[in-house]
Length: 300
Length: 71
Image: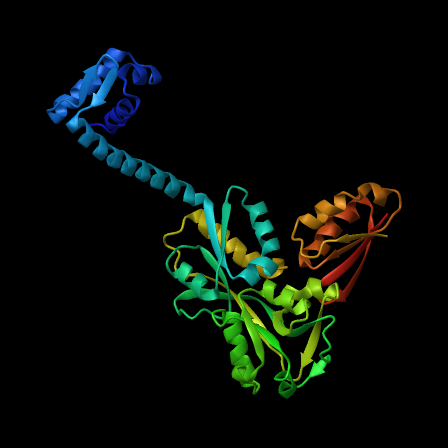
């Protein structure tokens, strides 16, 4: 019967060019290794090496075997690695969250989870709300945090907190503290790009209060709240930002709130996961239930 | 008054920073810890009150706390 370790040994002999050297490295006798190679050759019904005074060199069949043995052993190693990862994934809890939630709301919650479940590794990925939903649906993450309700109907959802959206300006910006919706159209604005659900929800809300996004003087669109904040601090224009992301800058007087008449947008943030958790271990269910219990009181 | 800026710091960083000023607090100095994290106030209370320090709290803007700690 062929054994995978015989193939692995064969590879080593080819690479070292010496049976005695490999035998020494494996702490077995040279004759035992020679016998193993001979049995391998008998099994394949062909010699595999040209033997000379300076060691062994694979012959034509030996080179064929070497090529295939590399693939077989590579696949075997991949399999062992996959098994190892699968066994250890029991101790990994995967969370997918939008950048705003991850950066501004979840840090303390994560600290509490780590304290309560020290053996678990929290694997956290940042992505858009749409991607978070996909990750949960495809089983790539155990739990997700998104803005707005999930679009997929078959996901468990729980509203965990809400946060007010504000129009802000840099402290040196001369925009008045109070403006009307009509006046807003005269001021340069920076917005998040359309692919962010935060932007989509903002556009929907502006439409409700009678402001068409297309009539706004949008200088440019950016891909993160952080870059939006920086551009606003530098006085390039006004922007909309969730309150949780601007507390520090408001306190340090780098940003100031501009009161836009009739604008009262409260963003809602949801925890999502698969409705049924049949494929989850008891430990995963326990951590999941713990997070659902504490997240509302531990968000920053 | 020693100003300890913990804005943007999540648990347990504010408490770790505060521990660096125990010497000054023991000599009678006041520390003003500023945090925008809702857990920090509770963490400071849990840490400071049992060891005999006093705290005074103000919330100058929503979600930002100025916590004065003194002996």
